[in-house]
Image (cartoon, rainbow, N blue to C red):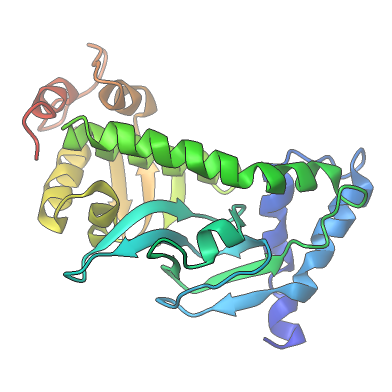
Length: 252
C-alpha cells in the first residue's frame, strides 16, 4: 500500500476518536497519536484470511470471525466493523477459526498506542478480547432460543448500535455492505429464511434497505420485537409487529 493510499484512510480514523469519545482539545495528545496511524494503513482483499501477530484497528470495511465446517458451510460468530480492534486471539487462526475480510478491508497498526501515548485507547485494546468473549456468549445464548425473527431483529440492532458508536449512523441509516446470505451465516439460517423475514420487517415499516445500506425506521418497535414484546403504538403496513412477534415462536 503506497503513501497516497494510506493517506486516504486519514478521515476514517475519526471512527476511533468517536468510539473512544475523545475530545480534540482535552485529549489532544492521544487524538494526534491516533490520527497519525494512517501511515500504517494496510488493505486486505475481500475474501482473504487476515492473519495477525499484533493488534490492528479496522478503519473501513467489514470482517468476520468465522469457522468453515467440514461440508464447506461458513458459520459466522462475530462481525468486526470500523472502529473495532482486530486482536491476535481472533486473527491467529486457532481452533479452526479464521478472521475473514467480508469486504475490502483496511486496518491500522495499534501497537504504538501505549499507555503513555494513548491511555484510553490502550485500555480499550486490552479489554477487546474480554468484550468479544462476552459478545460471543451472548450470541450463543440468544441464537439457541428458537426465535429466528427475534434474533434477526437483535442482530440488526446490534450492528446499528455499533456503527452508531463510531458516528457513522445518520437518522437510523448506516452502511451495511453484506447481503442476506452473510446474515444467514451469522444466524444459522438459510438465505431464503432471512429474505422472507427481512420482507416482513419492511412490510411492517420497521426497516428499509437497499444494496449497501439499511435503515432502522421504527427503533422502539424493532427493540420490542427483539425483546419479545410488542406495543400497540406500532404502525403496521401489510404485516404487524405483533404478528411477527408471535411468528418467532415457530420460525425456523
